Image (tube, rainbow, N blue to C red; front, side, top):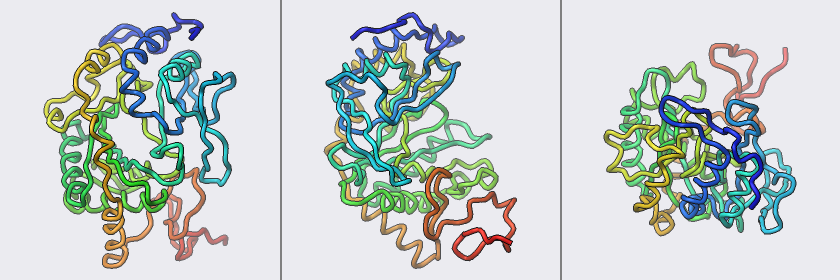
Length: 336
C-alpha cells in the first residue's frame, strides 16, 4: 500500500504527547489491526476524514471514496430519506490502511452486518455528560445502566468514548428493525432515568438536561453511528475509544489511551473478546418501551433533525421557543 504524504501531521503535538503523522496512524492500524477488524469487520462504515489533519476541514464519506482498491468490498445501505447507495466494508487490514491513505482518522461502523443492513445486531448507548459532571459521574451512570441491561437478559460491554463519556454496547439477535431497537433503547434509558433521576436524563433538548448525563437514544437510529472501538478520535492528543473491562472503570482517565499508547494495550487480553457469543434478545428492552406507552402514557421522543418527521414525534422546536397554539396534537406545525 503506497502512502502519500506520510509526514503530514494529522494530530499536532500537545503537552500530553508528540504529533501523530499519517505514517504514525498507518503504523497504529497495523499494530492493532485484529482488534479494529473485530469492531468494524463485515459492517458498513462511514469514514471521518481530514485532508489536512484534525485542525483542517472535516468531512464524512458514506459513499466509498473514489479510487477504492479492487479488493475493497461494499454493501448497499438504505438511508432515512429512502435513498440507497453502497457503503464501504472493511474486511482486511489493507482496506483500513487505504482509509488512512485517504486521510481517515475515525471509523464509524453501522450496528448491522453487511448481509442484513436493516436489522441491527448491536445495541449501543452513548452516555454524554453535560457541563458540570465529571468522569466519575459517567462511571456511576454506566454501572446503573449495566444493572438495567443485565436485568433484562442483555450482556453489556463498555468502552471509553475517547472524549468525556462512555459507550455501552450489547450484542443482540438481528430480529428487529431500527425503529424497534430504538424503542428498546428508549425503554432502557427511561428505566435508568427512573432509577437515577438526579444523574441521568432522556431530555433531547439541551436546555432541559441541566447537569445530568444524557442517555443518547438516537444513536440507535438508521445511519447514526458511534466511533468504533480502537478508533482514534479527532481530538487533541489523538485519544482512542478503548474497550475496557467493567472492573477497570474505577480510577480510569477518559483519555488514558492514545494512538501512541494503545498498541501496547493491544498486546494484552481483549475485554470484548467474548462479545459475539453473548447475543441477547432485544424483545425484553422493547417490552420496557411498551409498558411505558401502555401504563405511563410515555410515547415517542425526538428524532435527529436530518430524519423525516416520524409519527407521534414531539415538535421539533426548543421548548423555550414553543408556542402551544402553533402545534397540533401530533406535533405538526400549524400555519397561522
